[in-house]
Length: 325
Image 1 (cartoon, rainbow, N blue to C red):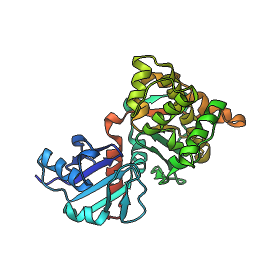
Image 2: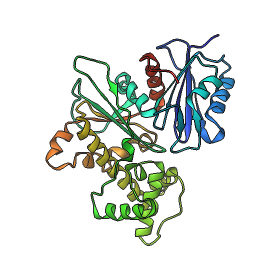
Image 3: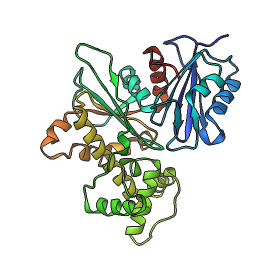
Image 4: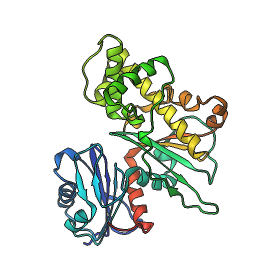
């Protein structure tokens, strides 16, 4: 059996893969593989193809957590570096399309149903208006869709909004940002609103509180301390994380005029469950002074990654006729 297309969503921690027999078809053999298990992207893809025992595909689309600005890609949050054309040739592909992973997810947004979305406040989406997308995972992904007049097909925004400068809302946040500035110089939103950022927040609060708490190295340890052991410091770090996310998401909504809604992707927020709905996120999203009412009307949704939306978005990138590597 000859498969038509291979799809991948490449993050800083995991790579998710699937294949379609035909354009618009069902995603088959969805697998999640740790990036760290493979020396190269090509090795990860070849191992997947061997696992699912299908012939090499003719074409592929890969969403990747990285800027895609030329043939050479050097991942920001992982050690893989490669030439797009070299990957295409090594996999025997006739066509290979690379897009930013959040560009791929943005392309999938109009196809999401209520089954894969959990609302977090706001009013009704305005049809034809821009939508915003932001999501903390290994890094902080940011994208969106804008709709040209008379068009129902959204045009994705490919940028690096996760690296905008982070601003404080409270004195405690200012103190935390000061500590991060001492360590990194520029303090981007990603420095706090990501998996590594949650760990940074926890350790900064430990330092401010006189080294109380425990040593942690992963975001899952912080959420475990918060939810399983009701650790006050971990809960404080999570609240600060959600507050920062709300502020950055509100800035994005204002910048894009995202009356079509704000989607929260990435792997971290869905794992927070309904606790997130009661966090400071929504209040901080709306805390923009004279534009509070403007933002209060904008709906937000948490995107369930279980439906592999970014893989469908990668397929959309192939359908759109984007140029091959």
